[in-house]
Length: 238
Image (cartoon, rainbow, N blue to C red):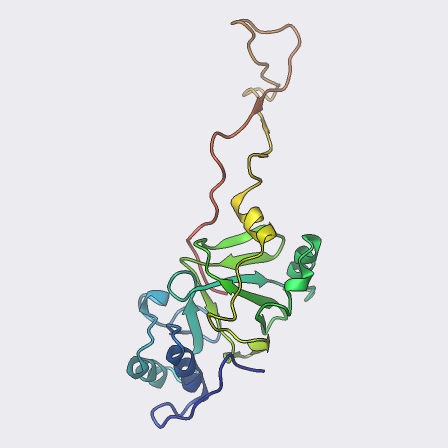
């Protein structure tokens, strides 16, 4: 299956990318244009210009008929996407391997899964209030949520197409983000690693005991008083 929904032919949308964009918009997902070369936004305000208005969609793609279809992730669309990247030089599926190390290989193909032109995979979930991260879940595993966007199936670049491999991308088809992924994004629930403090001379700085230094230097542990933030909301493209 190449797209998430069947494409309808419309007189005002004669180009396939425009038809694909209208298809997504018709199903409630706001769309905007992205450059085929580097996937950056073509619209003045990026994903903030995304719309479900079919007239505006037709105008967008009339101006740039070969534009990729971008959709904002997070609350704007109800989508949260886990991006499994490959090594750019070797093509090795490092992101998928990292997911396997978490015991979550079964997610690929069991949730709506999209193949990317580079050989990676996008796993679609229901939005969960989190933002964008880079390699926080694991090596070559990025996430796109609030403040981000994704290139959706039906879009074609010089390297190939974004293709939906299974299922459908609809609100009813989306599931909650896997618990192990959420835990990785939200930290280790109180088991934060300690940090070792050193003096400016590079020697260990021992703690004081009753106002005095001990005769033998010891490492000093410091635990954060607050949990790590769940995600960042800067950056975007996938």
